[in-house]
Image 1 (spheres, rainbow, N blue to C red):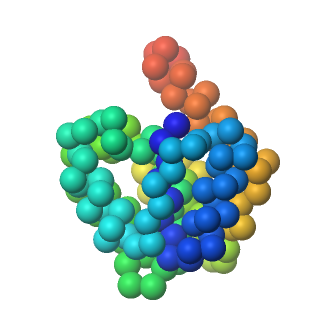
Image 2 (image 1 turned 135 degrees about the vertical axis):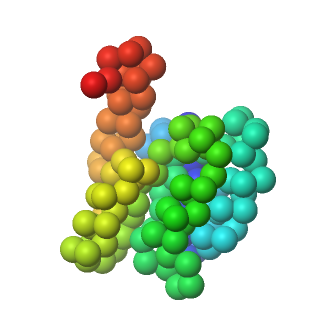
Length: 141
């Protein structure tokens, strides 16, 4: 599984990358410190599905453009990108307004609390893989 990390905190990027590796989820992680860099990457690889991530772990609160700004830009990407990529939003401050807004987004599959732990990320990824398997087999409602 290819994973993109979008977070303004370099320590969180490092820890999350290591956690994904230790959990056996991914050794193919692309970190970004800003929304602009991440969106630029997705746009430049929109027609190259092999380069696109399967999952994005997106921090909600970042200076400048935040996770919700990312979602606004993500919505404008080609349907091939939107269909391939799943997004988990992550935040250390789970503000009720942010939670409500994230839950309303059709692109956000899960909301996870930072710092991430192995159990939560593994459970969320396993659930995502099961959902994708059901969709691929035509068993989704």
